[in-house]
Image 1 (spheres, one colour):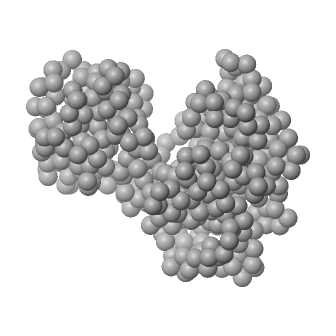
Image 2 (image 1 turned 180 degrees about the horizontal axis):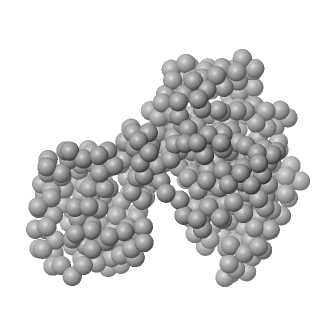
Amino acid sequence: MATVTPFAALRPDPKLAAKVCELPYDVMSSEEAKVMADGNPLSFLHVSKPEIDLPVGTDPYSDAVYNKGRENFRKLIADGVLRRDAAPVFHLYRQVMGGHSQIGLVGLASCQEYLENIVKKHELTRPDKEDDRVRHIETLNAQTGPVFLTYQAVPEIDALVARITAGGPEIDFTAADGVRHSSWPVAEKADVDFLVAAFAAMPALYIADGHHRSAAAGRVYQSRSGEGGSAGFLTVIFPHNQMNILAYNRVLKDLNGHAPEQILAALGRVFDITEDADPVPAKKHDLAFYQAGRWLGLTFKPEFTTGRSAIDLLDVSLLQTEILAPLFDIGDPRTSKRIAFVGGIRGTAELEKLVDSGEFACAFSMFPTGIEDLMDIADAGGIMPPKSTWFEPKLRDAMFSHLL
């Protein structure tokens, strides 16, 4: 079973939400955050990236940074900018980006079930990033960044969501990037009970984005023996058929000493190649390659796309094993300094810009990993390669926080 419970969320004053809510801490640099929050004392970046309020060069992992975040967080609460629900309830959180809309349930998932792998993972975590989130939670005594979960869609849940969201939202704003954010409370006892029971009938939930935040919450839960609100972690849970996964593209610093014609010959052994191709691949096992001002379409030859495990059949895995490792000598993309990753939200024009500038030698445009692949791999206990998925739109910090 999957335990999902309502809670008394800390939320922004609806009139101020557009000024308060911000992108997650880990999708921007400190310099970018400082620019974004400039002139806006209500920006939640003063809490999630508080180094922006300290002298340039301050170690972002110093005590001063965490303490500044706590100070800024408490001020937002004291000033009534952030307000706590009077009683435990669920909320629905809708995001609209262009033609895509997704609606998730805001609640608490179980830290114990995370540890027991009922909440299933598909990525490895880095200890230093876990440590950072643990310190952030402990210093604020709150979880301020929700974990993005998904589940196999249930028509009865869809119907409840449609009924509630047919009414006017409590919070509703469009952010600077054009993404619209809206929320509705789910406070009727019958609706709350239905949702609790519906999730309890599910065998598992799946982490889409937020492996370090969930791991940190699990560590705090263990250190506190589940006291206070530490037994649950803040999440927004979306049905799998509303997931919007973009590609996670690759750019390479050099050609590993190979001439362009040698690269082309090596690619021809693995791919069927199309000249002057669309830079956006059309289907699984299609890629596009950019070098010297032109795009080539790449389709893995059939012998590479059969007889392998679900993990090994991912395009990011095939590219790594058949091209990046043997041809470019990139053995571990997690640690190599010769490869970088570009989220699909930036588009293929960003790949052209990076290569045309001379900063990088070539680029691979990927087809997005499917949500079904992610769930199958998580069910099998597998770990996906690094930078396999890029989910959009991103959940906004400060829409909901969980006080411990």
